[in-house]
Structure formats: structure tokens, C-alpha cells
Length: 189
View 1 (spheres, rainbow, N blue to C red):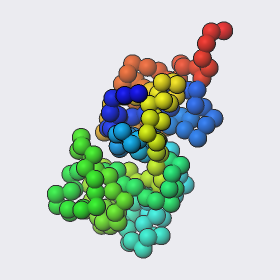
View 2: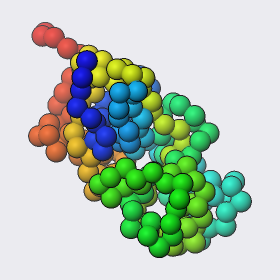
View 3: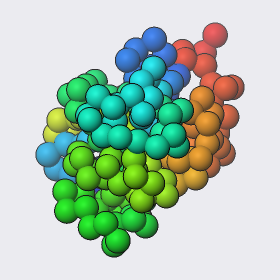
């Protein structure tokens, strides 16, 4: 089953996923190819702040990281950190462990970006997650045909500036849909 490449797209959990792990989530797809897909949930903050995470890693941080939440990125490798960030700082700091995702976005598991953020010389916009969401070959395409996910092109404003609780609805609105009016049940009454 061939599907369009969903890299740099959002996955919006359909209301039918309510009550499941992915219920009410917005996931940014970092990679999608014949082997499967990898993404980061971008609307589920944890109780851990970036300042706490940096402290655990032995990185001294200024006060700008004190209230920045670390997000739950997905159910896979929950102890692994990922930084999704804008490429504006990449030229000056040359973060060699980063992957260029296109559309002005970079992804890394490298410590260098976290150190730069802590020293206030990092990217202008970033998200830090623990864990990621992964799909095996054909799995995401199958879930889309089962109406588990709605897709739309990713949007940097939603990724970095919209409050976490509003992100799913803002992404749906780019498609002209109001998720608040959708039922989690299929069929007619």
C-alpha cells in the first residue's frame, strides 16, 4: 500500500483514539519511508522541566529554561531525549549530530544542542521530548486507512508557539475542521 510521504506533517489523533495512549495527541512526523515512520508527540508536557533535565545531565542552565516543559515524545525509548529545533543556530554552532529534516527544522539526540540552549546560544525555537513514536513498515498507512489519524502539513507556528492544549485543534483548523464538534463514534444514531 503506497502512501504519500508524511515527513514534515502532523498526525492528528482522531476522536476514536480517545482513551488510548495516542488519544488527543498531535505528532510531528520526522521521518517516513518504506521502512516505517518516526515522529514526536508535540502536545503532551511532562512534569519535568528543561532545567531539571539539564541538571540531571550535569549541564548548568540559566533561568530561561526553568519553566520550559519537557514533552512526552512517544512510547518508544522513553528515557532517550530528542531535540526538535529550528536551524537558525546550526551555522554558528555546527551541531554535527543533528539531522536536517527540511523546512528549516533539525532533530538531534546530541548533547551539544542542549548545552547551547543552556548557555543561551542555541536555536530560537525548540522542543525537547523524551521518547518517540514509531511505526513499522506499512503500519502508519494501515492506521490512516482505519481512520485513526488525520494528516496535515506541519506548521512551525503550531509546533513552537501555540499552547499545548490548543495544538490539535489549531492543526485541525488548518484543514477547516473543528475537532471539538467530532464524535469519537462512527456510524449513525
